[in-house]
Length: 498
Ligand code: NAD
Image (cartoon, rainbow, N blue to C red; front, top):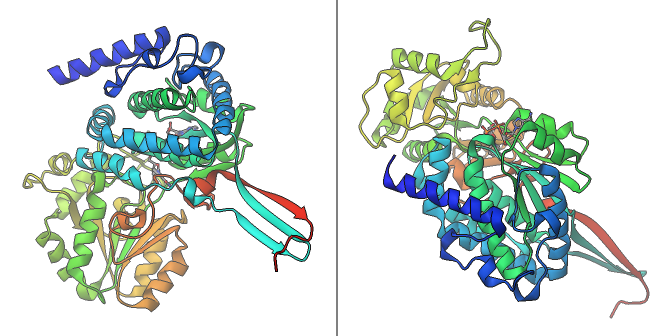
C-alpha cells in the first residue's frame, strides 16, 4: 500500500469515528461544525438536527431514519427561502470544483472504471448545472383576474445513483432537487458508495455550517436492495429518481411511487458520407473514449455508408484509434460477454463482463492479444450488425463499425441497436432530410448532429449538463423543474392594469 492510500485510509477512519462522536470533520481543511457552532445547536444559534439524526451529516445506516432526517431538513430549507437554496447550490458547486482531483481519484480507486481526467472534468463541469433561475413561474391574466402557476417542491426525494458516475450524479441531483426546494435520500451503487458517502458528508457539513441544516442530502452508508425498498416505501418519500440500468428502472416503476427514471441506452451513430469524415471520426473517438465509454450517452456503435466506409476507417486510424483484426475482436468478445450458466451463444441476454466495463484500452487490447501504443484512447473494428458489441450496451473503449448499403438500412439498424430505449443517437451528415428521418425513427431524448455525444450535455455543444437523463419516463435531461409539482394560485378580481 502506498503512502497516499495509507493516508487516505487513516483519514477516512478518523472521519468516521469523529463523525459518530458528534460530527467533527477533517474535510477540505474547513472548521468543524463543532468549532463553527455554539454547543448544543447549529451555527448562529440555528437548531441542529433532532434526536438520532444529530451529528450524522447525512450519513445513515438505516434508510428509514435517513428519510425522517431528510424530511426535517426539507422543512428547514423551506424556512430559508430562495436564498437558502441558492446557498446550497453554490456550496455543492464550489465543493465539487475544489475536490475534483481528490474525489475523481477516490471514485476511480473504488470503482476501477473510467478515466481520471474525465472524472475530474465531470466534477468541475457541475458549475454550469442550472439552479433556481430555471424555475420561472407561469402567469396568466384575463377578464376574470390572474393566475400564477408555481413550481413547488415535492418534499423528500429518494434517489438511486449508478456506479458509472457516482459523485457527479449525486451532486447534479442535489443541485437540481435543492434548487426546487427538496431534500434527498440517496441509495448509491454498492460498488461506488464509499466515495459518495464521503462527498455527501462534506456537502452536509458545509450546508450545516452555512445554513444550520444537517441532513439535506442523506445517503445510506451500506446500500442494499432492502434499503432501496425502505426508501421507496417510506411515507416521507414523495418522488423517486433513479439513474441506472433496466433493473432499477423496473424496480422504481413497480414501487407504487411516482418515479423519474433515467434508464439505459445504447447510442448508435450514423455516418452518411455527406459530411466531413475526418470530423466524424474525431467526434466518435472523443465521445466513445470519454471516461472509457461509461457515459450512457456515449457512442456505442457506428453505421457507415459502404461508399465512404474505407475512408472513415482510415480517418479513425489517422486520429489515433487502433483497429483490431477479426481474431482480436473474437478474443475480446469472448471475454467481454458472459453467458449465464447452461446457455450457449444463442442466449438472448448475455451479461457484460464487469471485468472489462470502463477499463483502459490497454486492458482490452491485452485481452484481444493486440499491441497498442501507450495513450491509445479507443479501439475499433468492423463487425456485422448483429454482433454482440452492437447489440449490448457494452460501456468499453472499443467501438464496432458496421457497413450499411443505404441511409435507410443505416437508420433501420440504428433503431434496432437502440432497442427502443429512446435515449441518445448521433448523426454525421449535411443532409437535413437524413437527420429528420433518423430523429423520427429513433425518437431519442438526445439527438446530436455533427458533434460528439457529449455535445448533447453541453461539452462542445449548447445546453446544460446533468448526469440523469430521464429517458424511460420522458422528463428529459434532469433540471430543477423535473423535481417540482405545479401549483396554481388564482385571484379572482378586476386586477388588470389595462
Ligand atoms: P446498474 O443498473 O447496475 O445500477 C444502477 C443503480 O441501480 C445502482 O445503485 C444499483 O445498486 C441499483 N439497482 C440495480 N438493480 C436494482 C434493483 N432491482 N432494485 C433497486 N436498485 C437497483 O447500473 P450501473 O452499472 O451502475 O450504471 C450503468 C447503467 O446505468 C447503464 O445501463 C447506463 O446506461 C445507465 N445510466 C443511465 C443514465 C441516464 O441518465 N439515463 C446515466 C448513467 C447511467
